[in-house]
Length: 85
Image 1 (tube, rainbow, N blue to C red):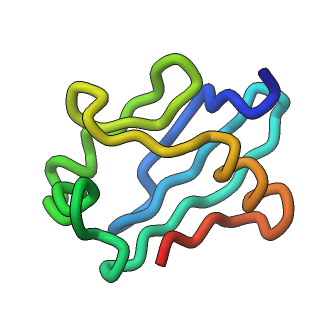
Image 2 (cartoon, helix red, strand yellow):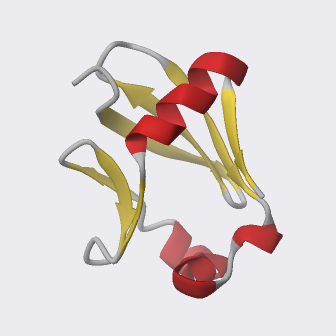
Image 3 (cartoon, helix red, strand yellow):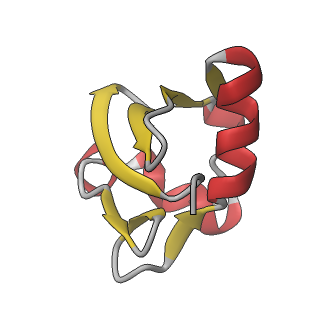
């Protein structure tokens, strides 16, 4: 689908750039306040660098953490960025 992620690249601490199947690109940024519960592992820079794209999703680890591509697409198409705070 058009909101499938096909590429993700680390930009900096807690941020990465994504590209969707339809060519839309944008930035995803986590604020430290968002990193609790299942997302707490992303505080570890080495774990964060293990970002991958599989089946249209951005994920980490053995797909234990992933992000909803539909929400990401909507925010990026409206604002150019998805800020997770």
